[in-house]
Length: 381
Image 1 (cartoon, rainbow, N blue to C red):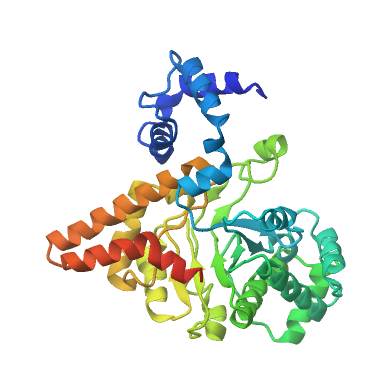
Image 2: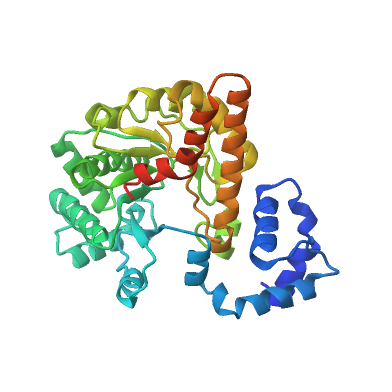
């Protein structure tokens, strides 16, 4: 595996043409131009010169992460953190005196998914760091409440759940306790493990109703599709592929419990575009607790964002969505992604105005809401 930065950059530049027509090309062109002042396309011929220019820029104080945070006009960034994370880096940021706002989001996959690597050991650690008895169902739920409260002390406003499906369940508590015992002891079969994940989404929703954390559900990815790539590069690098996802029947147990709660916000994401008009928009249109997250991951693109608006607006409207929030791991790409989202939304609004389906003053108001106001409101920022 190549480790030399310049060699990696040369290979990237030599093959930059492969990104033509992709969102990666849009993001990277924007970043090179707006951040580094480069208005030529990377190629084998200019690779070394561009590398030297970027390297020189990154040595300057104005390219440090905190300086870029301010340059990008960012108000808040949320990281996604395991329930087992000690949040040490958040503590360091808080104690540094810096005014930037970086908050965690509670991601409990490691202790709610029986198929997660080291699940049993994770439960033991979960008990150690919370002081709760995670050998019992009630103690296990108390551990979640404790960690959620701890995350809130660092400014957390949301939870995040990356389940393979949108399945939810609403078991009587004695049945849930018996299921937990089987899972805890490693005796649960595949159906029981799936049921446990489903039950935990409902439990997390009930906790959100109590503590006010916004709940995000990110289902529909078949993780680590290639065992060979997983073995070579590790978890989350083994070709994650979108799958068909049911929401209408899958979410019903959860919605029967909390769907009509106006003080609860559950944001749904999907990798299955076929569910936009058929399932997600109608659900968000009637259940007060539900909001639709923006086009995500494979569909975080100009075409994907446009399809999202075209397929959801008629039924869900604009105000049952949450505007745009990105989940990039590439810090310099944040402005690029938001720029694309703003342009797509404004183009969609302009079409509605041109067709006399929206007044121009309404379009200006909506443009601000879609770019800024809806996300800030939905995530209680």
